[in-house]
Amino acid sequence: MVLSIIIPVYNEESTIELVLRKLLGMSFPFGVEIIVVDDGSTDRTKELIAAVNRDNVLKVHSSLINLGKGAAVRFGLEYVSGDYVIIQDADLELDPEDIIKLLDPVIAGRVDVVYGSRFKSRGPRAVSVPWYTILANRILAGYTNLLYGSALTDMATSYKLVRTEVVRKLRMRCVGFEFDPEITAKLLRLGHRIIEVPISYEPRTTEQGKKITWWDGFRFMYYLTKYRVQSADSFVRTAGPRGGDGPA
Image 1: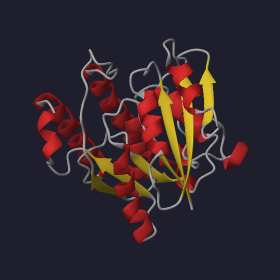
Image 2: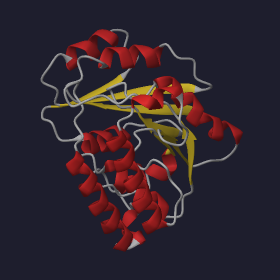
Image 3: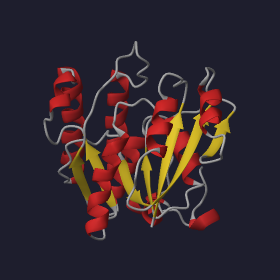
Image 4: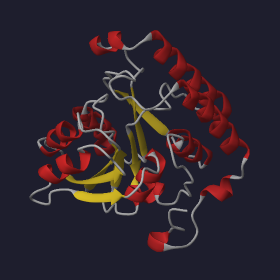
């Protein structure tokens, strides 16, 4: 079995090298490939990725312009060869070591989707999470559960582990941060059960480089509503490379 880790990155010179070296130094229970998608960075991100990749231990793809996280993830998905795929943000808000926790349900039995929840349990690192972050995520999770009959505690988590054959069947349209509500909504509408495991979380501030804003929360609710009323048949890819209709 092989795990594919997609890292969408845009202007993360302060953390990208740490993320990559930490992942490369970890011991996984099975094979791993790391796919880095640089989304048009204008700082030293490209140089730092190249420095880590001197021995070609990574799959690196670059965009000439910044398109958005969703576009970068979708591009990375086209190069996945593993059995499962997970998204790793480049900002170190989440600890790469926690990926092992998400693999436990996979090892225990056939599971298609596992989310790492930042709010499922209150660990010692959770005390640093601002109250408004907790409130906003509870609202988003609650709205998701109301619309889709799920029981999620963290819809917007970056750590989404999905069986590759499942995610390849999804017709994704996202460009920016709406990747999170889109993939969650479509997985739930197509009948996939999402298992959550608790993970640690150390949020950063806007001054430290955090790119998502309060406005994205309203956009998330819009997309959750949109995909609830659309036909689930439109969520499935039907033709094209690798059994899908491409990134469009």
